Image 1 (cartoon, rainbow, N blue to C red):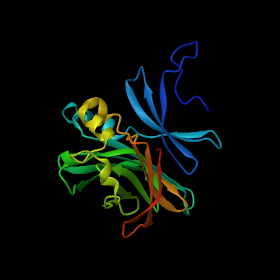
Image 2 (image 1 turned 60 degrees about the horizontal axis):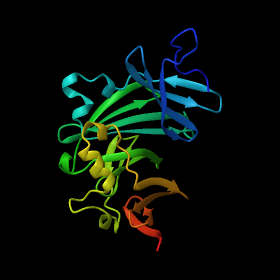
Image 3 (image 1 turned 90 degrees about the vertical axis):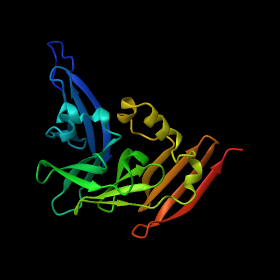
Amino acid sequence: MPMLLPQDDSYGTRGGNLAPSNSSNGLILLYASYFRKGSSSFIVYDPSNADYITLPIAPSLVEKPDTSLRIKGFLVYGFAFDPYSINPNFTVAELTDDGGSIRVNNYSSISKTWTPGTYPANEHMDSFMLSGPSVFFTDALHWLLEPSGVIAYTIRNKKLHEFTSVPGDLACVDNEGYCNCARKMMDSGGDGYFQCKCTCRYLGESMDHLIYVRATGNAEFSVWTLDDYYRSIWSPRHCIVNL
């Protein structure tokens, strides 16, 4: 990997930290924080030719103090690279709650700018949250939706779509409708906001289908597939119980 961070002194000490945020079709999205500058940014890295691009600072990283991220309920990032279009391009998106709505800041490698957008939430923002890294599938970015289900952001028409809850999955949440991970994130306040990553659920892609995985404290491992994407029809595929 090339030296993506500047040297901090004559001894070659790196002047910041790099952390992988997501990947898509061979490209890697990195989160870079710079010690001396006191700022952060995203870097898109292509390991096949060691090339990289540093993006303009994301809107959420330059907000005024009165709209600080610390008062937000969630912040998730998405990354999509489409190598099969006429003009291969990538998209970076960040979603956060914004006073009863969902705000989406979208960066396109075509326009080379961040574009903001605000979408009404179907429920009160206090009753659900988004978590986890994104999954790029059928021209849309997908995240886990608490307490159960998936939310999608279509890249071309810039719309949000909420899938119905996964059948049977609600049996794995508490009396208020949250899994253990979400409960811990909500109870931890500001620290939990920066750690929006559910560890008992997983969203991915396999054999041209979205897959949804739930692991419970009862040593049970369940897998569903989204058989009909446009009608939101899930089907259970596997259930493994350690007796």
